[in-house]
Image (cartoon, rainbow, N blue to C red; front, side, top):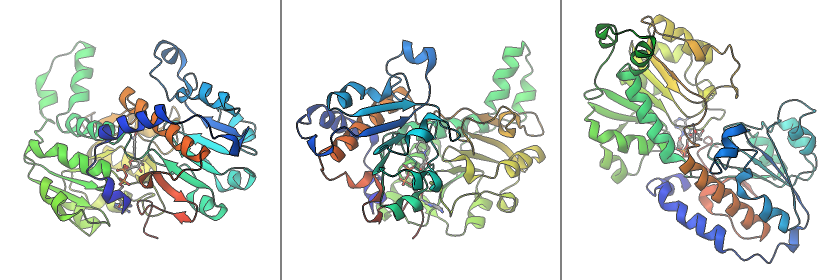
Length: 393
Ligand code: NAI
């Protein structure tokens, strides 16, 4: 499958090729689709984006493609205004031909909006993860959905390792104590452990999940486990010494640390819920950088409060931006720690932005020139789902 093929090739290996193809592409044959409307929903970068041009995924820096698109005679509308019928996004979707979105500030393309989007041919996700698009509706309407596969998988895998460590080692309360001016080692050490000797398991062992397993190898964990309906190729599983567990309840009951690395789709929405959390080891740590809605918001907050979970960390939320009163912002374990939540940024490091901006341009270029798309980038193709990662269909 595409996933399995992409598993071992590193994102950073991919980027030079993407950059080159973007740079060297001929600038001739755009006549086929003249004057189309390209709509992009990105996050506003404010002052930071003015000071830092490498923040390419922002409304200010516009993925670095405005000049290029306009020279070809296309209209390029960029906005962060995405909610409600009067938003720039929803007003312009009716006649846009290309929609570019980013998971970091998702323009939610619902079935309703797809019905209204009379000209829409292709959705490009600047990044990885296209659950903010109603993929089934896109399939029915023959709208292609592509993402820049692999562009930020190392970025996320590194964040996962950091998140596991900060929970297991009780880092956040330790730092907060120092900022407060206090110094009480025992208060921190009573909830701090080594990662060595623990059982760590990933839900989803695709590009990110596998890279997490690879990065865990030197920590000498007791065992590395994975739960995925697609088995890893034998040699890949052997290289990281990971064992597959096919029953989810059994899987979570064996893990000290669970990390979630599967896409959000019908089969994973609310997967980690009140019932499944009962099967976790008491005091387990849970890291979710995949999608917020894979974990039930209230069940996670309750499990952390009761100590059933001892920590929860990640960067993804069921709604983004998360409301000010979202329980995940402030939830704590019984000792007042165990929260490693941050805004959605693990896959949007400056390194990642260079790769997904170049990849977005390359997908657009292929579309404009009627060239085949790279197979690993196609989520929904002209004839329906091309990837198996969004559910077994
Ligand atoms: P991938 O397609 O390479 O791997 C996904 C894996 O999940 C596949 O092996 C698939 O079989 C498995 N899977 C699907 N449904 C499953 C289920 N019900 N149970 C167990 N396994 C299941 O995707 P990749 O590149 O590893 O990305 C995974 C997800 O991570 C993305 O879909 C996205 O939601 C998230 N992500 C988050 C980022 C962030 O900034 N926080 C950035 C990039 C991706």
